[in-house]
Length: 141
Image (spheres, rainbow, N blue to C red):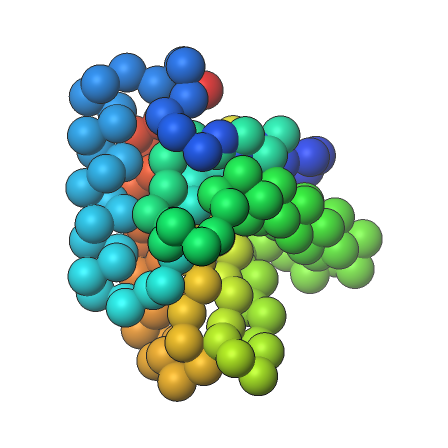
């Protein structure tokens, strides 16, 4: 699956999502939170509007959604420009933590914030699995 173009997200469930979809997305985020000890998760549309999130009160889910969209968009463009094959994930290592972002199908993105000590091999695997589940839950938003 090759993805190109800008990304998006939304802080609360998107108007296009249905209650069943919201339940599935909530289940995916709950599982990812439990299994990876993430500090924050946001599912966003490729245009940067929040679809659903698990973000502490001191963080702005809309800002994380916009960052996720632009980060994944940049990574997609870079992968294509450098002929590196299909984009999978962006990993940004920082002194205070790690940021993982990935496309969740052609219409959405997922961003997660993790402690600097997080086990990235397991986290990356679980994030990849979650993006597929999010893509399936959203269909075309």
